[in-house]
Image (tube, rainbow, N blue to C red; front, top):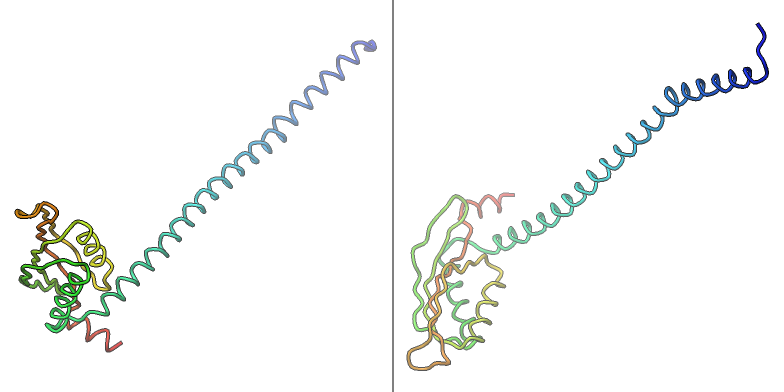
Length: 184
């Protein structure tokens, strides 16, 4: 059986299409899928790496904050002398910022595992700018200080003055922790 020239061309064309389809299905398409899969895996790893870098940066930031707080706690001790120094420091800050303290009253101290929380009630009169300076300076003290309550009302005799009542607490390290730190 002999094929005509036209039939040979059609036969070769069909064989070429079959070979091309076979190459595409069994060789080219799996390679393309493999490359796409690799690209997706690379992108997933890049995203994971970016997330990990953000976590590491945040961890370093948190470690710096922790070290700062730890250093601030080390400067404190839990004895009554430190509490007296803290009250004197509040009074000095009030004088610096033109706040007239009418009453400063230490409240009970609460002891926890490693620290002692001392609370003070403070009643004063001042203008708004003096109050903001005072609050700013309190928050920037080296001790760990928290303003728990702050109540501001206008003074009854002068509209430009404010009557301020606040409850301020300070954290002091307990003696057990001080002794452990000294042993190290």
